Length: 142
Image (tube, rainbow, N blue to C red):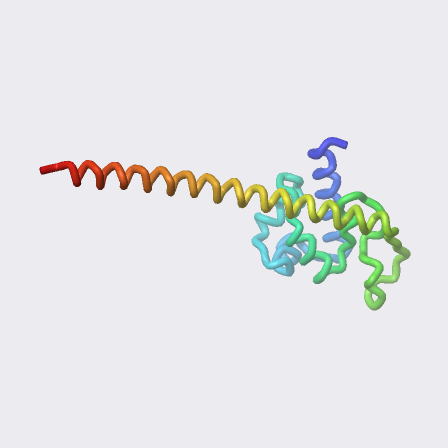
């Protein structure tokens, strides 16, 4: 399936979840510790929900990551027995899929961070060479 299509579907499920628990975008984003504008980008599908945010949604709101990502199982994680009384189940395969996707997202985030660090290191190297050149020129002056 196309990555953009998957992201749009996950975004739509995120919106369904938020509405199911009866929270506005503002209250839900506050519960996640992010700005409303950042949350709106997830819900609109403009940005993929990062793995750390998925963990927060699971921990604070009991959102099933398998359901969010793949539409499989129930909306709420099976561990929630006190507040939700809807049938739900996640198979072992779904749990593995969840973990694999989270690992993939985390890897992508790490790769982006490494790329940023590489660019910064290249810039530092360029500045060092420039400084060495300047020092050498100053040393050659009478």
